[in-house]
Image (cartoon, rainbow, N blue to C red; front, side, top):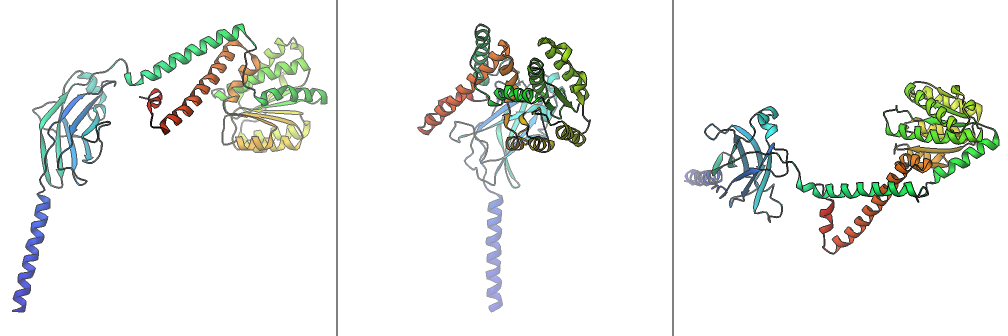
Length: 403
């Protein structure tokens, strides 16, 4: 009797478990009431946007799967999207619609899309939960079309036009007013002091390039500074030594220094051997330059360009000789070493601004002044935007959206 009762209870439990599993597997899926496909606005003509309302049966264990085909009559065998039914909601729709952009180039290839321009692509939406699937009744279709202009980036275009206008205006203003105000850069003002000290002591000034070649922006900026230093050195009748690691930079530096001596009216004082190739490898170069510092004891050291691990060795050696040291680099990893060991350090963009600051040429002067004004406007916008956003007013953020 006891065995019979146990068997009955076990049978009932098995039937209940089986019915629950069956009910879960046979969960009723209700497809979305609509399914739309349309050309993605403001794109290059290689994507289609899909939009559909949420399904009443959405849950975390249900997926939306989208299949695509070039022809409505053939099987939809290209899966272009698979997402959880609780993700990818359309912006500003209060989560009532799903939205997705399909990159046709990824699934059908760039050549096929270009070959069949303005051709319709067909899409089928499937709601899936385990082995249970249901297909939306609507088969959506759309043809991709390229746009000449991305209207979402109109704000960027307007900002660019305004900034270009500001640059042109300030360049013209700089031509009429060569003494146009620029923010003070202490390191550049100290160049005169360093060269004057070298002249008084009767010792040379040493200019050290970074390790990059002429293809580097920092090296180009450093060569521009070298030209201004060389002109002042020629006027003071002070010896200038320039250590190079790259042969191309060496040739450019020789021509720049020679031209500077010519502008100063002292072409006879130019010594080509003072602009030399110290070494072609990083640490042999450091050893050679450090040896020059220890033997000749230059009164002023200039480190200009992009530096690596050698920066601390060079600057520490120069500091031990008692020289005035001025560094300028856009290598943020080396800035702490220069700041610690040098008297003055030009950080980042100050290296690029040096040419305009020293030459006072209207083209460079106006451009640099426009950059400063533009930065001031951006900082003001950030401050004002932060205050407005704090009070729930966020319209200013749309002005600077990337689109």
